[in-house]
Amino acid sequence: MPNTKDQFQTILIADDIEANRALLTEILSAENYRIVHAQDGDEAMEVLENGEVDLALLDVMMPGRTGFAVCRALKSNPDTRLIPVVLVTSLSASEDRMQGIESGADDFINKPVNKEELLARVRSLLKIKQFTDELEHAETVLFALALSIEAKDPYTEGHCDRLSQSSEALAKRLSLTEEERTALRRGGVIHDIGKVAVPDQILLKPGPLTPEERQVMERHTVVGAGICSPLKSFRSILPIIRHHHEKMDGSGYPDGLKGAAIPLTARILQTADIYDALTTDRPYRKAMPPERAFALMREEVKRGWWDGALVDELQAMVHGSALSN
Image: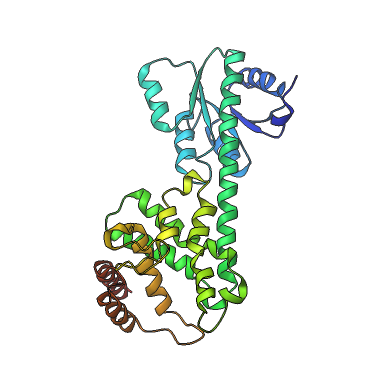
């Protein structure tokens, strides 16, 4: 019986020999996969860049771009790098296999193709691709939700984007790892997602919050971490979401962490967040110039609130950026 669940999954078959394309098409069409063809590497790239392809079967030795070259181009493009690639080849030398691995290939199939082996590998890779697509969809929903929260308040327009960029730039200045920089870039957008649970009359209140309202507001860090915790890809962002309102003297929330116990990524985002808040207009005051904002932040460093070393680094970064403009 054909697998009806797979009927909308699209497979690209790229081979310059028509008989090879016909054989693979016959095997895969019987399983209700949608098949698209390419006769050479350049045509394969055009199909991959312009269409919705779930898996690519690439002959290695094709005119123009080889299967290796197509695979490298595919895996270096953020828009196509998650498409599984199977190299179909008669090459058996270990150096050819190594070249395929270095190109980013997900699997290999030798010619002449064994039907059962082909179907088993295609099904396995398409199942992984389906899980990846579902994960990306979940992440997209969370980012859209975070931006919709920001959009409720006209005074915070663009805040998430600025915070994302400045936090990542500060992390780069501090020579943090690529994973930490990525976490800060994404955390800049998603850090306040827990505010979805805060009623608008509290979230948008122009005056001071009552103790009860503040308690509701402060729960947003815990709620946000809870929303994102099921996604393993958000694991490095969770400390940022939960702890970006802690203070160096332990008077912050939600856990009252002190000093170095506050994750560095959370302190970096917090520093950039405070600076952005001070240098943009608010209903109760106009934006401060950078020097005034840093002076105020240093006063609060003396009170034991923020990380003074990070304030120094941010000021140096902002000053350097101003000089280069």
